[in-house]
Image (cartoon, rainbow, N blue to C red; front, side):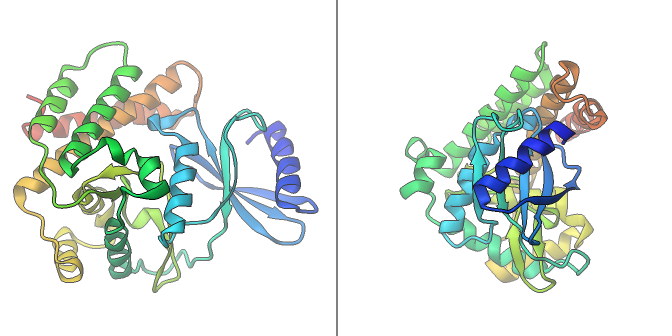
Length: 311
């Protein structure tokens, strides 16, 4: 945040949360999608402010905050959302405020507990009440249909971010729609699940974080993404498979793995193009936007070719 944003946010937090004053702000994340700031009051209270950065990855912080609120009501360990600026009028960017969740950052990740927590979340009925309304469940009849909707969503993100048609992505989208698995269950899907996106006390997950990709879909999307993209720093792939089978009974066949591996590279390649667009038009001129939107995008695109999907 710049000084003008900090001053405006300080006054708003004091009024909204009833704080005497804001003592300090400290940025805690250099993540691509959101700026994350710890705000501390003069009495020592802390909250986390999650701030939009131009609509990176085609995601929406307001929808993210609403999903977190709905999941919190279902008992999922997520930070409680305290306040939201849905207009961007306060600091010129939309943001939401959530409770600070205690955690032990240097302790080993409690992988088994995470697997159990994510599996329990996948078991929530995503079609009823406020959660179903938020996720548009009335418009989706099966996990396969939800998957195809996600393929189209990410194709649309790429198309809106690119001035030219990218044939490899068009062909990948066609393959992914044609080969979408039936799926056993329609669930809430995190979309970016893994050890980097939860906090814990060394034994238990205290909060699953980073819900910008949350949607209705097939829970196998989460498991393959976790093992493929985020889990390697915690456990080898085969050990993930073993623990997943032992704790949940889920076993991932080779064909299903290939599908979701391809889906994740397609999603990443499409989403990353939004970073290039935001960098080029000056909305978000951070150097990492240029890197993600070019080099990382191409790495993912190359993997789609190697998987035989983008041909």
